[in-house]
Image 1: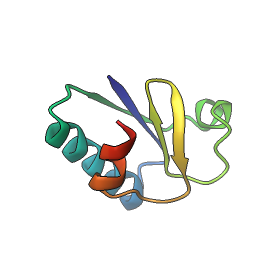
Image 2 (image 1 turned 180 degrees about the horizontal axis):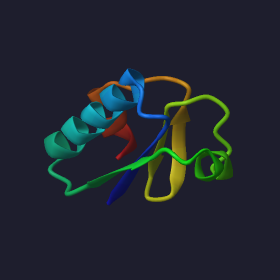
Image 3 (image 1 turned 90 degrees about the horizontal axis):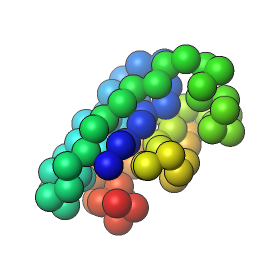
Image 4 (image 1 turned 135 degrees about the vertical axis):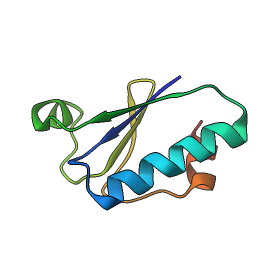
Length: 75
């Protein structure tokens, strides 16, 4: 599973990445966390507000930091 964090690398992006890592570990699913900071790539997903969360190339959230439980439901 590939989880992408879309954003500039701000503290919200870091928190979302940490929560995604925790959710994958809790679910027992191996996941690669990829940080995407290039705004052209971010815009290609249709994200207008960061951070964005992409799971296996599907945009599942943008503009807010989901907690580990919310991310776990999306996995």
